[in-house]
Picture 1 (cartoon, rainbow, N blue to C red):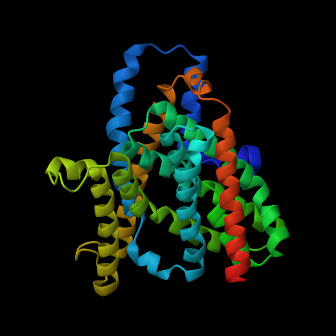
Picture 2 (tube, rainbow, N blue to C red; picture 1 turned 120 degrees about the vertical axis):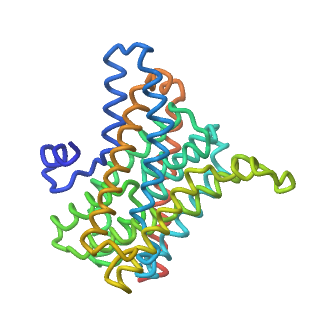
Length: 337
């Protein structure tokens, strides 16, 4: 459906709307215009509780540590400060706007890491409510779409069709992976530069891997379980089990790729085509589970309760998005070029 919308409305080969974004927005719209009884609440809660966490666990199969070693130093030089200073800004400035801390952090990780997916992955750690998740995704989707459409032209103006600079800028300043792809396609169509697509994609993948560090950090920051307690239950509160599953599948992918290179068989059984098919299959299952979970969140969310949170959250989201873009520009301009 996302590709259909991209082709029909924007005439792109790949939609700038991710399936996760479409799912939650569709759910919100249906809930707003169609009367849904409480009989479905148990189904929504089941999807949100179990489908969401298993989708995140299987998401780890898409990330390989071996791939990180191939990423350029320049991408890391841009991505790491953008993520760090965005989280720092939210923690110390968010209170000035009287923004609920959980929403502020969700907007921060969505803006600085990987859009809706980062919000979905972080929400269980923060114990965020479904309204907070929906509002954070709506906020970063709005500004992500704006950046997807206008940043390609801004990037060309700022960097004069420099492939490295433009790719780094698009990959580090636009929120969602699908939106980064859409922006790079727009740039290529306008300025005939396919290298931008490759560089921006690599940069975006580096941002995605930051979830490995950011989610445990927020778990410790949010739950505040002190080491002096030293009980097993306290440790589990610091690191929810689904995070261990997520990390497990990252190492599974890394080890499988390593064995494939060394022995031409992954885990001494899967050929290259079989291993790639397995990874693709698990990635597809993850995407389906996350899409169902996000649709359930949308369908179970009362849009009127979102309105009560106030327009100031949108202003806050705009400031965070603008900050990431400006910081990315200065790093590229003065440290890389």
